[in-house]
Length: 185
Image (cartoon, rainbow, N blue to C red; front, top):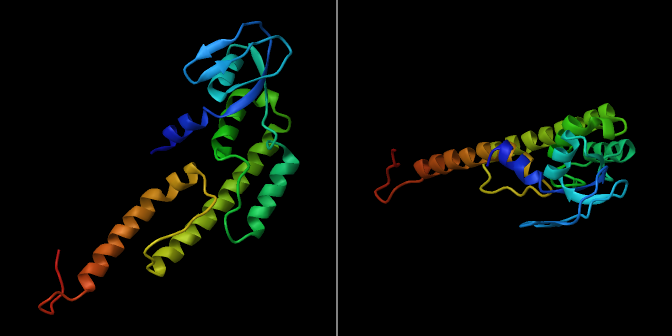
Protein backbone atom coordinates (compact mmCIF):
# COMPACT_ATOMS: atom_id res chain seq x y z
CA UNK A 1 0.00 0.00 0.00
CA UNK A 2 1.44 3.39 -0.86
CA UNK A 3 0.86 6.83 0.64
CA UNK A 4 -1.88 7.78 -1.83
CA UNK A 5 -3.88 4.67 -0.88
CA UNK A 6 -3.57 5.50 2.81
CA UNK A 7 -4.73 9.05 2.04
CA UNK A 8 -7.68 7.61 0.12
CA UNK A 9 -8.69 5.60 3.20
CA UNK A 10 -8.31 8.70 5.37
CA UNK A 11 -10.80 10.56 3.20
CA UNK A 12 -13.53 8.27 4.54
CA UNK A 13 -13.08 9.74 8.04
CA UNK A 14 -15.91 12.06 9.02
CA UNK A 15 -15.79 15.76 9.87
CA UNK A 16 -18.46 18.32 10.65
CA UNK A 17 -19.27 21.05 8.18
CA UNK A 18 -21.56 24.05 8.31
CA UNK A 19 -23.22 24.28 4.90
CA UNK A 20 -24.45 27.51 3.34
CA UNK A 21 -27.05 25.74 1.18
CA UNK A 22 -30.15 23.61 1.56
CA UNK A 23 -30.43 20.04 0.39
CA UNK A 24 -32.51 17.08 1.47
CA UNK A 25 -30.89 13.88 2.63
CA UNK A 26 -28.52 12.33 0.08
CA UNK A 27 -28.57 8.54 -0.21
CA UNK A 28 -25.18 7.04 -1.04
CA UNK A 29 -23.86 3.47 -0.99
CA UNK A 30 -21.65 4.33 2.00
CA UNK A 31 -24.55 5.77 3.96
CA UNK A 32 -27.02 8.62 4.06
CA UNK A 33 -25.80 12.20 4.36
CA UNK A 34 -27.69 15.27 5.42
CA UNK A 35 -30.06 16.92 5.34
CA UNK A 36 -28.07 20.08 4.70
CA UNK A 37 -29.45 23.30 6.15
CA UNK A 38 -27.62 26.64 6.16
CA UNK A 39 -25.86 27.28 9.47
CA UNK A 40 -26.56 23.83 10.97
CA UNK A 41 -23.61 21.45 11.38
CA UNK A 42 -23.74 18.11 9.61
CA UNK A 43 -21.22 15.25 9.68
CA UNK A 44 -19.89 14.13 6.29
CA UNK A 45 -16.90 12.15 4.99
CA UNK A 46 -13.76 14.22 4.50
CA UNK A 47 -13.83 13.78 0.73
CA UNK A 48 -17.24 15.47 0.58
CA UNK A 49 -16.24 18.19 3.03
CA UNK A 50 -13.24 19.08 0.86
CA UNK A 51 -15.37 19.04 -2.28
CA UNK A 52 -17.97 21.33 -0.71
CA UNK A 53 -15.26 23.64 0.61
CA UNK A 54 -13.62 23.89 -2.82
CA UNK A 55 -16.98 24.93 -4.25
CA UNK A 56 -17.43 27.43 -1.36
CA UNK A 57 -20.54 25.59 -0.15
CA UNK A 58 -19.48 25.07 3.48
CA UNK A 59 -17.14 25.84 6.34
CA UNK A 60 -15.28 22.87 7.80
CA UNK A 61 -15.17 22.44 11.56
CA UNK A 62 -11.79 20.97 12.52
CA UNK A 63 -11.77 17.75 14.56
CA UNK A 64 -11.74 18.19 18.34
CA UNK A 65 -8.14 16.98 18.62
CA UNK A 66 -6.92 19.55 16.10
CA UNK A 67 -6.27 22.11 18.81
CA UNK A 68 -2.91 23.66 19.74
CA UNK A 69 -3.09 22.76 23.44
CA UNK A 70 -4.14 19.16 22.78
CA UNK A 71 -1.50 18.69 20.11
CA UNK A 72 1.20 20.13 22.39
CA UNK A 73 0.20 17.59 25.04
CA UNK A 74 0.33 14.76 22.48
CA UNK A 75 3.74 15.89 21.20
CA UNK A 76 5.15 16.19 24.72
CA UNK A 77 3.80 12.78 25.76
CA UNK A 78 5.27 11.21 22.61
CA UNK A 79 8.66 12.71 23.44
CA UNK A 80 8.53 11.46 27.06
CA UNK A 81 7.45 7.88 26.37
CA UNK A 82 9.80 5.24 25.03
CA UNK A 83 6.97 3.39 23.33
CA UNK A 84 4.52 4.74 20.78
CA UNK A 85 1.54 6.53 22.31
CA UNK A 86 -1.93 6.27 20.88
CA UNK A 87 -2.73 9.03 18.42
CA UNK A 88 -6.03 10.93 18.53
CA UNK A 89 -6.96 9.56 15.11
CA UNK A 90 -5.48 6.69 13.08
CA UNK A 91 -5.14 9.12 10.16
CA UNK A 92 -3.93 12.16 12.11
CA UNK A 93 -1.19 13.03 9.61
CA UNK A 94 -3.32 12.63 6.49
CA UNK A 95 -6.28 14.52 7.98
CA UNK A 96 -4.03 17.37 9.05
CA UNK A 97 -2.44 17.56 5.61
CA UNK A 98 -5.75 17.47 3.75
CA UNK A 99 -7.55 19.92 6.04
CA UNK A 100 -4.68 22.40 6.12
CA UNK A 101 -4.20 22.21 2.35
CA UNK A 102 -7.88 22.73 1.56
CA UNK A 103 -9.40 24.55 4.55
CA UNK A 104 -6.64 26.31 6.50
CA UNK A 105 -8.85 29.40 6.67
CA UNK A 106 -11.33 27.37 8.77
CA UNK A 107 -8.72 26.15 11.25
CA UNK A 108 -7.56 28.50 14.01
CA UNK A 109 -3.76 28.65 14.41
CA UNK A 110 -3.26 26.50 11.32
CA UNK A 111 0.51 27.12 11.12
CA UNK A 112 1.04 26.11 14.75
CA UNK A 113 -1.05 22.98 14.22
CA UNK A 114 0.98 22.07 11.13
CA UNK A 115 4.22 22.46 13.13
CA UNK A 116 2.96 20.44 16.12
CA UNK A 117 1.74 17.55 13.96
CA UNK A 118 5.03 17.56 12.02
CA UNK A 119 7.00 17.55 15.30
CA UNK A 120 4.93 14.60 16.54
CA UNK A 121 5.42 12.79 13.24
CA UNK A 122 9.19 13.39 13.32
CA UNK A 123 9.40 12.10 16.90
CA UNK A 124 7.46 8.96 16.02
CA UNK A 125 9.50 8.29 12.86
CA UNK A 126 12.74 8.73 14.86
CA UNK A 127 11.45 6.17 17.38
CA UNK A 128 10.52 3.88 14.52
CA UNK A 129 14.02 4.14 13.02
CA UNK A 130 15.60 3.40 16.40
CA UNK A 131 13.30 0.39 16.80
CA UNK A 132 14.17 -0.82 13.31
CA UNK A 133 17.89 -0.37 13.97
CA UNK A 134 17.63 -2.33 17.22
CA UNK A 135 15.50 -4.97 15.47
CA UNK A 136 18.11 -5.57 12.79
CA UNK A 137 21.13 -5.28 15.10
CA UNK A 138 19.72 -7.83 17.55
CA UNK A 139 18.57 -10.11 14.68
CA UNK A 140 15.04 -10.43 16.01
CA UNK A 141 12.58 -12.71 14.24
CA UNK A 142 9.51 -10.57 14.87
CA UNK A 143 8.59 -7.07 16.02
CA UNK A 144 5.70 -5.73 18.05
CA UNK A 145 4.86 -2.13 17.23
CA UNK A 146 1.70 -1.02 19.00
CA UNK A 147 -0.11 2.26 18.31
CA UNK A 148 1.42 2.87 14.89
CA UNK A 149 -0.75 4.42 12.22
CA UNK A 150 -1.12 2.97 8.74
CA UNK A 151 1.03 5.73 7.23
CA UNK A 152 3.81 5.07 9.75
CA UNK A 153 3.68 1.35 9.03
CA UNK A 154 3.72 2.17 5.34
CA UNK A 155 6.86 4.26 5.87
CA UNK A 156 8.86 1.44 7.45
CA UNK A 157 7.06 -1.66 6.12
CA UNK A 158 9.26 -2.34 3.10
CA UNK A 159 12.41 -1.99 5.19
CA UNK A 160 11.11 -4.45 7.79
CA UNK A 161 10.06 -7.10 5.29
CA UNK A 162 13.32 -6.85 3.35
CA UNK A 163 15.30 -7.03 6.60
CA UNK A 164 13.43 -10.16 7.65
CA UNK A 165 14.08 -11.75 4.25
CA UNK A 166 17.80 -10.96 4.41
CA UNK A 167 18.10 -12.22 7.98
CA UNK A 168 16.30 -15.43 7.02
CA UNK A 169 18.72 -15.99 4.13
CA UNK A 170 21.70 -15.32 6.36
CA UNK A 171 20.44 -17.70 9.05
CA UNK A 172 19.72 -20.49 6.61
CA UNK A 173 23.17 -20.08 5.04
CA UNK A 174 24.84 -20.33 8.44
CA UNK A 175 23.03 -23.51 9.51
CA UNK A 176 24.88 -26.70 8.63
CA UNK A 177 23.24 -29.05 6.16
CA UNK A 178 22.84 -32.78 6.73
CA UNK A 179 26.30 -33.52 5.30
CA UNK A 180 27.88 -30.83 7.53
CA UNK A 181 28.49 -28.15 4.87
CA UNK A 182 26.81 -24.78 4.64
CA UNK A 183 24.24 -24.08 1.98
CA UNK A 184 25.06 -21.75 -0.90
CA UNK A 185 22.48 -19.75 -2.82
